[in-house]
Every structure is written in structure tokens, then in C-alpha cells.
Length: 252
Image 1 (tube, one colour):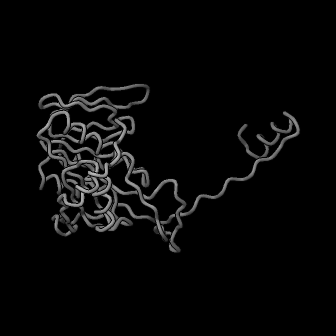
Image 2: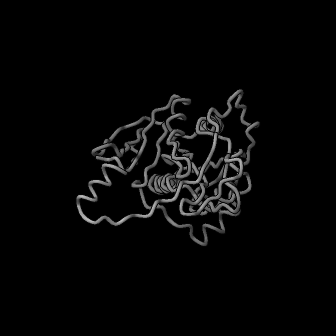
Image 3: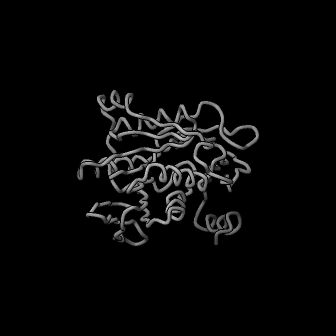
């Protein structure tokens, strides 16, 4: 069995980002981390491999070749993933649809039985790649997974839904997107970090994947820094509060 898993780097959500002068992207020394949901997908792939044996795990990263390759090694291979793939692409222009198309081509090359993807990236928060990929492959899918169990040629997935949980059974091959409640990602051990340096890491350019006329469908028109929060004011009494809510805030 083979599992393909996502390994996307994202800008640190706790870092303060500077918008470029043209408003198209961020500039300066951007701090990056492994996407939190991808960490859950990686841990799920490792747990399934440990439980069932005879499972090859492959991590896919898309973006700047050098930095993405480093994150695939440190965030996936060092944790125990068998090998990695990096597809070089401009992270400032590539969109969810083109990423799904790249995954489709890698799936055609690798023929995995299961694709595990973080349900969304914490920078764009689009939550689209897994669903688009399942459509392009014509594979069954289960999103927002909080539990994944292999049962023969079926996968039983517990999904987070509004108001509770839903359990679905899918035939292999299939696409599953990981939620944060799926597991607690492990840390990379020192031995894992050393082994990761020697694990295979294949590199592709977009032109190598025969994407045809596939191109980004979404472009960034403009990015702006959120305005600061206004300071609060003290009110004299309830009547003053009601007057401000009605006259200034216009919420009542």
C-alpha cells in the first residue's frame, strides 16, 4: 500500500507580516512553519503505516524548491515519512485549482492507494484542494476527518460535521482531508532528523508534469494590513450605553 500525504509550508500565523508596496504579496524575512493540518495528515499516514505494515509513505510539497524541500525533509521525512517529492512553483501566484492539478499528476505517477491532505492551509484557508483533487481523479472523498481506520479494502472515516460526527466508509483509492482533532502530531527525533538527510527527495518543475493549459484561476488583486482596533470608551450609565449603541454603533 502507498499513501501520499501533503507537506505544505505556510507563513507563521503568529508572525507579523509586511505587505509589499504593490499589495500583491508579503515581503521581508517571512517566518514559515509546517501547515498544522498537514502535520495531522502526516501523523495519520505514519500511524496507519505502523499499524498495518508494508505501507510506503510519500510527502508532497509545492512551492519554492529549496525552502519547500527543507520543510519536506524536516517536517515529514524526519518524522518518519519514507520519501518526499517537491514541485517547484511560485507560491505567490499558484492557486488551489492548480495545486489540485499538480496533485493529480503526481497521483498518476505514483499510483497511491490513499491521499491524505490537510483540510486547509492556515494562510489561505481556502479548504478546496482535497475536494478538487477527488473530483479530478473521480475518487471517493471524506473531508474533516477526526478518525481514520483501514478495514481491508475500505477506509472508515469519522467526520466533523455541524452538530456532531458522521461515519462514512470509502473504497480505496480515495482522498481524505485531515482535521486538527484527528491526532496529536509527533515531534521529529534526533535519529529521524539524521535519517531524513539521506531519504530520497524527487524534484519536479511544473513543466515536467504535462499540465497542458492548466493555469491559476484566481489572482490576488490586493492585500492590505488589517486596521487597528479602536480603543474602548467608558460610559456613565446604562442610558448612556444604550444611546451609544443606538446612535454610534447602530446595533440596536
